[in-house]
Amino acid sequence: MMTLKKMKIKQPIVVTMVVILTVVVDYLILKPRVIRFESNTENMTTYNAVELKKYDGTDLNRPILLALDGLVYDVSAGGDDYYKPGQSYHYLVGVDSSRYLHIFGEGLIKKKYRVVGRYAE
Image: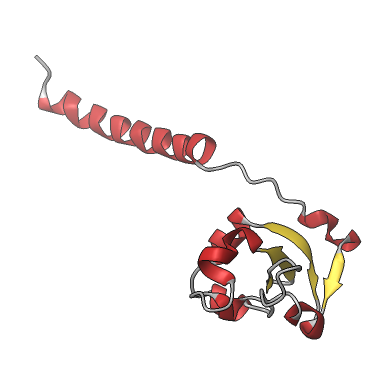
């Protein structure tokens, strides 16, 4: 039979092991692997406010773009549901949306969509 003194020693070790295992599983297994090519943006197109406005989803022959933290993301894949004119997040496209996305959504944009250029005001 295990004494109370032995249980007190083992309990913190077990809790610590569970926490470590949870962190390892979360970061190494469950987190999606996102390959980013931000270091190659020097060879990509640089957009300013006037140029980026052309990619706001109103021209069906152009991709839908938004700027976030100096990078331009192609969000065309979410266009029908979110970014085309009349959709909930249309106000985010064709402009620098950093101010809005820092409140909510920054992580989603960076994980889900690819970088296609740089943004310079």
